[in-house]
Image (cartoon, rainbow, N blue to C red; front, side):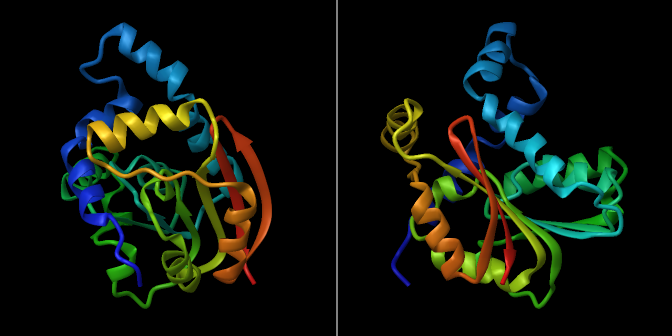
Length: 220
């Protein structure tokens, strides 16, 4: 496998864990900052609602969130009745937030977390649903990770991909990669489909949500 930039990505997310989670909570943010989040990071909220709508009734389901961050999807699935939810992430400070969140929400007994890149995660578990949201932005070479996700997905895989050539693309490139040292990547729809199909998925639907391609796929 080609060398990728996961060490830089890990350092970045570990550093900004609380800053990122505040996008959901508004904690310690001014009214102006919360307003700007709602305007310029609108698709963060939209992709959350898209995932929940696509998953529908998750009661009794097992779910894996690849790149789970601070656990917002994990706890929501558990509260909606999922049998068990597993979050996987490379940043330990993100997983500390996630563990605290599921404990506060009273669903810790239905959740577990793995501190790992999916490339190195040793598991033989299979999940009804897998999601990777806010994940591919930071992955230089997706195919190998996609194949591994395919192997652990039984029914549905939901993923969000940052679109190539939007107004936000150069802004994020400068802010994240050149100022904060975190590589960031963007994708064209044909390439996304090609990678998913090459990994053993069949694309069911694709919606353009804000600056994202949100894709529903199933194992072939």
